[in-house]
Amino acid sequence: MRFVRVMSGGPACEPNCPEWISAEGKIVRGSAEALERVVGALAGRRLPIFINSAGGSVEDAMAMGRLIRSKRLAVAVVHTRIAACPASVSSCGEARGVAESAGAYCASACTLVLAGGVERYVSPLSFVGVHQLMQVLRKTTVKRAYKVRYVGIAWFKWEVSRKLVVDRSTSTIKRVADSSVVDIVADYFSEMDVGEPVMELTLATPQRQVHWLTPEELASSHLATIRVEGVSPVVESEGANGLGGDPIDAQSGAVSVLVAKSAAALLAGPGKIESAFSYRRGGGSVLATFQPRDSADGSHRAGLLLTFYPNGGQTRAAQFRAEADATGGPVSVAIPVRDFCGLARGGRMAVSLIERPDASQDLPVDNDARSLLDEACAPVASAGSSKTEPAAAPAAQPAE
Image 1 (cartoon, rainbow, N blue to C red):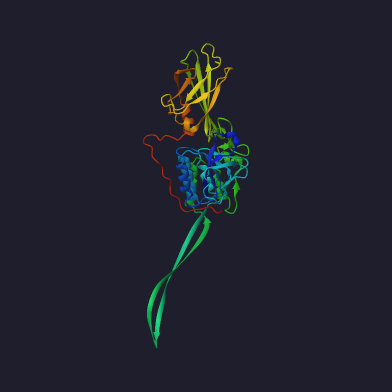
Image 2 (cartoon, rainbow, N blue to C red):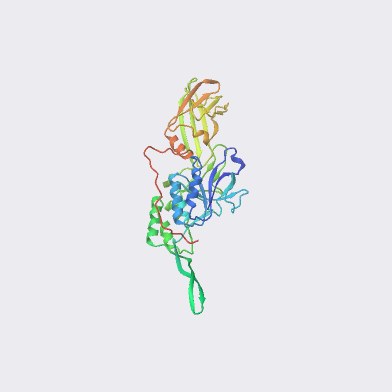
């Protein structure tokens, strides 16, 4: 399996295009370690995984799923078409690509990776399939013999040298996995909150066939939590762009756009300022919207110019100007995630009136911002937290 960090090549998203990790090909021994290296190089960014795979090693697939869940990443069944980077190339540099749901598939052991996502995106145009688990048994036969050289004189024979010759041969047998492997996989799906009929269909479908799960089966099992409409799961628009879709059912509690709101009295005169911050999962920017209001009747206040400091009034490492709206409507500005994430969790954000730079004031951040920050930025480990190591699994592998 090849892992590539990809940025959307669509022109509509510039300058803050969505990014994701493309995971394409067979899951083999070492795939989990390769994914861990790619995720570790993100410096805290929580990019979604776009996977397109027929399966492979169950052991590595479960390790990948546990890694994805521990990092709270989303997974989508998507094929990535990377510009100027054929599948035979192991590294694509700063890759630009297009995400396509149509024809993408996730079968066999790939479903274990999909199950690891905190949200699992599946399109009506993509396919998720299961079949019986296969166990690979390798038998190595060693034959030992000696190669002996003799010297014969008359009727006598003397040994001159003796050399050990070892002949090794390995045979591979694939068979339906035994109950111990089935139990491990069933426990894994339960751990990931994926229910029936996934295991029932896995056990009932012969290994030479694939049962492609219906939308109803994906929804009832929660193997898919977000239904992606259209030919691509990537939504590109000014300000808020990234991974988009609608919840399959109300039970999933899934949302593709997270919003945090705040309000505070204006220090530079009567009135108040309302703010809203929206982030689309997997996006490269946060859309900040400000609405000034008069205190008397709550009507829109026209002509207000703002400077927004996402890193706070003290550091002011980045500033963004929200242009005035003569009609009194809200003003918006797109903040790149890397700048917005300087905002302290549970802290405050600084806003200044451009015509009154001395009147800088803070906007409080309410609890709604925590979910947005957790999704857009690197999670902050709580005190006393510990790393959970993936459980070991036998060397079982579904048939291709």
